[in-house]
Image (tube, rainbow, N blue to C red; front, side, top):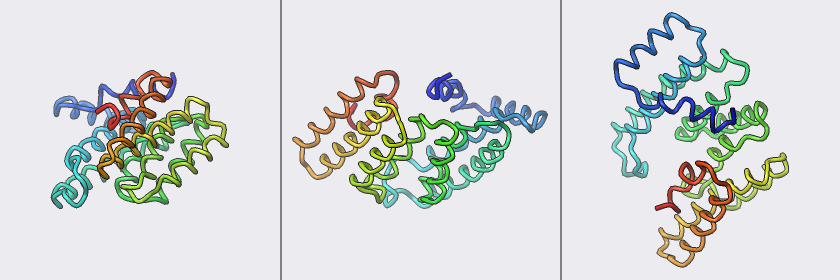
Length: 215
């Protein structure tokens, strides 16, 4: 399986009803060394945490939402960290843990997870695509940092398609920033660059990573 196909294999478990979640817990209890059981629960509670937080800026998010997210993410981290020891290449566990560490603003852990993913799968795009989002200006990064990361990834041997994905994510955010500055011309220019690259990449990339440009 490709990394995208591997991720998609677990997508049906992203949203579970209580009955199914109980069955997964029973599965984990009977087979405590099951990588999949821990991964499924970890992924589920990660997503529950982000649902509890909502999509608004942190300054506009009620503290109770933040606390609820942290509670869910603590469960997710226990499950995902446990799963790291249960298979030779726990790539998806690292992928999901990275999103949690980014939401925590934990740069040291995020860098360690990126390095871990690159050792497991040097050509990966999923983890790199997720990591570069943390370098966006709204999260405290800069476009200079994003460009440096793209150059570093290129030097590490990432494929042409992988580099196009990173560039598209950067242009997508540059368009978003332009909209916030009321610079419609620059926004359209950047969104079109992102969409053109997304079309060349193909597959599910555009749907997964070019939300602003699609909108």
